[in-house]
Amino acid sequence: MKIKKTLLKFKGLVSVYHFLLSFSGALFYFFPSRKIKVFAVTGTNGKTTTVDLMTEVFKEAGYRVAAFSSVKFEIAGEEEKNLFKMTMPGRAVLQSLLRKAVRKGCDIAIMEVTSEGIKQHRHRFIDFDAACFTNLTPEHIESHGGFENYKKEKGKLFRAVSKAHIINIDDDNAGYFLQFPAKKKILYGIKKDFQKREGSVLVKAENIKADKNSLVFSIGEDNFFLPLSGKFNVYNALAAASLALTEGVEMESIKKGLKKAKGIPGRMEEVISSPFNVIIDYAVTPETLEEVYKEIKENFSPTRLIAVFGSCGGGRDKWKRPVMGEIAAKYCEAAIITNEDPYDEDPQEIMDQIEEGFLRYMKTLPEGKKPHYWKIIDRREAVRKALEFANPGDAIIVTGKGDESWMCLADGKKIPWKEREVIKEEHDKRKV
Image (cartoon, helix red, strand yellow):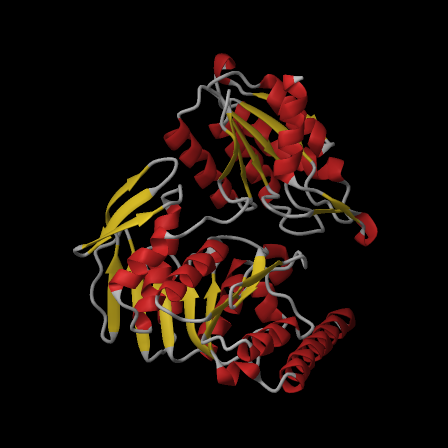
């Protein structure tokens, strides 16, 4: 009991420390969010793409925009890569970015907000004008002590934002986020026949058509073209459109903005197109991994799907490792389990845990349907193996790193890593 009380006291002190850091940052930079509209995007998946689509839409509508995501920081057209390996940086970084956006004359700022960031009070002392919810699936479970706690951390953002809420009504957890009051509510989705709620606006996509390069859909009588693959991106486009509508942006500007979407580096990015396809994607949750495999099967129609993947370490979400192994065994004809970001964990143990799920699913398959698989700790060697194994007409999907620039090892060590360059280098060696 004494140990438990001591731990709770320690956690309380840590929380106070982070709160004071947030207040100090806001104070030092003169509370910049009071001079600019700030929009928050939270959820498990799709945040980065949603921020990017929102940015394009508001630019098209004539706004001067700042955007902060896990990939980059953009202020009035000037971009720099987010090298923090942290979606929502602390230590007053966000406040300094907002102050810079104000100095550059930006009208709005759009940012990803994470559960870890909320837990450490990084959202505090930012006056958000709208909060957008994309979806919720298990993530950071061990850090938060369960899915319900993870959901409650996200809920703290909606409790703090009273002006406008944009909510994916198709998500199973939408009801939880709908309970928080707001002056404006826009509900968006694809699947459900909505019942109109008092004070809410409904935005529904219909007539969806997809191929490996684009998406077409309609909202009411308006037709939209999105130069991105993956049906899940329709949700991200709907979120962007919904936020723009809360700000009175014309539908024509929303159409033009979405049409200009460039896609996020390292998200469903085709690196090699011949004699087989090689795609990279960030996918670090079971849900996104499964969606990526489904989309490649549907849009590329490969003879065989070959996966190269791992699972991040650092004591985070160990539960998902065997689950991701099962998913790979279910969808792929071959898989190479490899290293990703082990941090202070033994990478071999992480791979063994992934393998457990892989083998478990393999046992359910008839002998002739069992996928080939290898465990190769060196990620470059794993890529090389996939390229050697592939035949014309196959597709290789390499997940977990996307556009990241580093691989994180024990004791804070980082080594440079650029997924697409490694793939191209190894592919070029095969041509010689």
